[in-house]
Image (cartoon, rainbow, N blue to C red; front, side):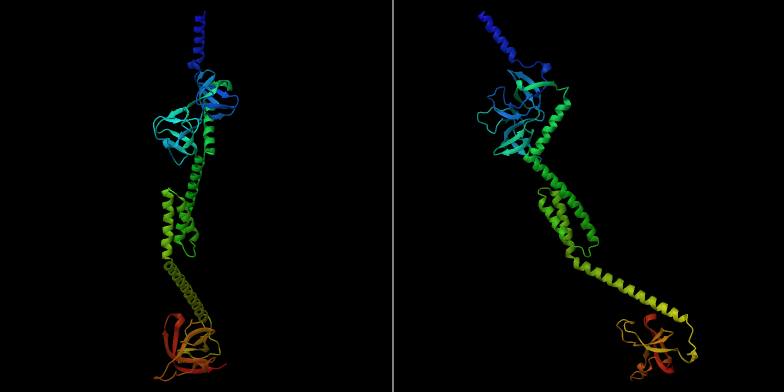
Length: 388
């Protein structure tokens, strides 16, 4: 009996410690209360993470009241930083083979939870001295007390719920990981600077085609800020440097460009002024041509080359010129600008100031010196016809 009892007890122990049957290996359980996730099936093993109630776990095997489980999205653990290369996205690439993931940040008296291989990527929560606090790969396994979890289904039945749990774990990592948040901040900064350089290039190109009065100072400062903040983003930095070079090249020749623009404006003003004067003189001639000669001037035109009233030329009518200070008018319109001919080096033959407001007949030579505006009559003979 004693021998049979011993055999029966051994058989019971073997059956109790046996793993789950194949049909139960993908059972999904949910933690019914807060519990520790440990490196082994014993409370003497270090806890790698405390799971809150309601966490979904996939059971791999059961042993002595413990479940070996996979945690959707991975669980917290540690790896020595010598074996991991960090990237800019908050991940770490494993550099060696059979690298241990541990429950706490020490290799002394601590069995590893699992091992990872060269090229595996780990999500880094934070750096603690020489160790990295990371999330394990999805296939990593740890242990939890069976009494603190309850069955809720199978892996096949709960595919959607397990995927949602994995995504939630990933979201929490992105929000809580120092490195992930830094990476997100860098991405946001790059997106912001990209939008800024896009707008800046457009504004500077437009301004360079019509630069008059444009202040490039604020744009130059903005481009310099992007260049200095771009870090190792060579695309952004090169675009900012190009904008700065375009501004510098323009400002180096800005005086010449503005001088050319000023000359063009002056030429346009002169053209418009000349056209206005020509239009006024055409209107004046048309007005004289449409008026009849007053009865007070019954002089036969055959005796003279021109008949009219001598009057001083208003200041500014001929610009700054004082060459012809008197004019011959008819019906309030200018016929000629007058010039008294000199006789063999003597003074002018006629002092026109003495004939102002007199109706006179003039014989002489007509000279066109610049179109209608400067039609000049050079006086050879002058007779006073009336002083009314």
